[in-house]
Image (cartoon, one colour):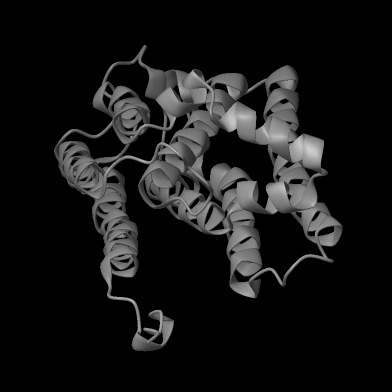
Length: 277
């Protein structure tokens, strides 16, 4: 059971209960709105070439993962660190991967009128966007945030304890986890246009370093439970983080390998130009 305040897990007054309900409702509304925008973009681009169904399925599966993490699993996480870690995997790793594979920016460029598509393209080429989507920066935002959250978990006044006492801090942390996970995943295996995509060797190196840091953090949590978390619950949660994270990390490595293969494989004979006499 998670009891960060030392006086019982999440004993709130009426105002606090309202705050937690408001945050959960806002999160579910946001997820629904994002899914709806994707559906609208599909409808607006219906006259273009067929959009891959697997990309649509991937986007809505990612939205479902985010909804689960923000809804029932978030509620269970108030009492269980294991449930909290399942939510972390869904919100910070699996949902970002599925959402990235949905290629939302590509779909937006198909759906927008010409002027809107050009404006979006200019925005994506701006220096701040290029900076925050660089693999090294995205990895620091993602992994650094996790170490800040869990690495100081034994501090009664740390971020982990505060997250379980304040609904709005809780919402801010989870929003960061989702956005940082998305940026990190997109910087490695993004399917959307990126004129400044980092070289494959750099992306592989960043992913390997992130895997090592994520595994070290899971081992740290196994041996050093956050404040208010039972030792057994912490150990199970740490194993969920370690082994569940490995599954997503392997998927990222496979996608990186497939991208390298697709970029370097020889062109088929039928695609080669025919020599003329």
